[in-house]
Image (cartoon, rainbow, N blue to C red):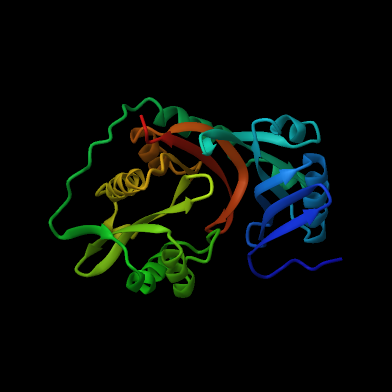
Amino acid sequence: MIDTPMHVENRVETGLDFTVQIYVDPAGDRLRVDDYRGNVFSIMKRIEEIAKQYHFTKVFVKARSEDWQSFVSRGYMLEGIFKGYFNGSDAYSVALYFSLERRTSDHWIKENEILQKVQTHPMTSDPKEFSSNYHMRLAIEEDAEQLANLYNTIFQFYPTPMNDETYVRNAIENGTIFYVVENEDQIVSAASAELNTTYNNAEITDCATLSEHRRHGFIKNLILSLESELKQRSIFCVYSLARSLSFGMNMAFHQLGYEYTGRLTKNCNIHDKFEDMSLWTKDLSV
């Protein structure tokens, strides 16, 4: 029996009739499949073996349109659709659970109420003006320390080690785009776009604002700036996973024209618990 790993790990598993790229996520108590080729039933067998070896309670796969029903036929649950993820073709978020506690949402009805309330509001993508005391710009590698401090201040737990200066610096070096808002040379708000150059999509993520600087509309402006940067790079498929209990984040994506396309049960360990995540997608080419 393999003990649960201490750190995240990206690796490729191969067999006689498949290859699969997995993300071992101990903090999230899950195995995520980011890409695969070959026999999907052989892939399912292998990833479930790995998940059980690590005692994980969830397997999360971005399945292709021709494969998602095969996953469902083996007990996986369809949780959402990443529209346009594979160079314009949809990816289907399917999940397999190994514990009833992980499978069961604690706040599904409340999250539905939040979603329905959000969707009654009109969409608006106009940038919001804010005080001249604040300045928004593209982040550079030298911002890594301040960004790490920002995320460390806001999040007790987070799916990725954004409180690690080295991790943030490496992310910027490897192409992740960050936009930040400064106040008196201090970064008070930030958001990023994590690029997938193989399939030409990007995840809007790492949205955070210090509590004393909220209610200025920074996140929407940051997302609009990230979208502009992505369009310049001919990346038109964008998506984000927002905490389903967060009225503000879900409102931001709705108002910016993102489409709600599913909810991933207890998908991420944020703050001090596993949380359901709402999936929002957008086609920047229209």
